[in-house]
Length: 135
View: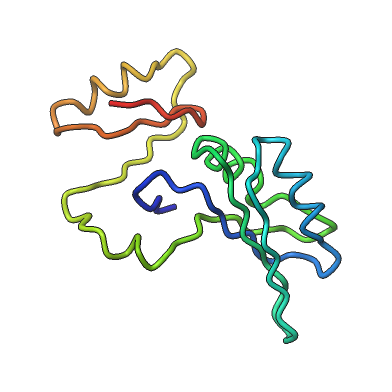
């Protein structure tokens, strides 16, 4: 997943059952962290409903993305991703690179990760187990 800059807190949740309500989404996502809002979009077409969930904290939104993407809600596997806004596309990101390092052993610390990548330049943020760690 490409994470937009600016510590996003909003997510797109798609492939929803027509029986899913904003209340249900808020109940499920609030178990991970406090939600600011949920906006359900139900177009009267053949498309499945979808919604946008906004969290107060980026780390809660990141944890929810990891926990909820691919989960079944009322029998349908939902798709969760960062909600992108047109403004996030305009920022100059030519010198920014996102790197995901997975399957780390539990003994690896955030400092180990920062040390390993230090020779390549400034690290703006490192994520380990859903926590944001300033670099």
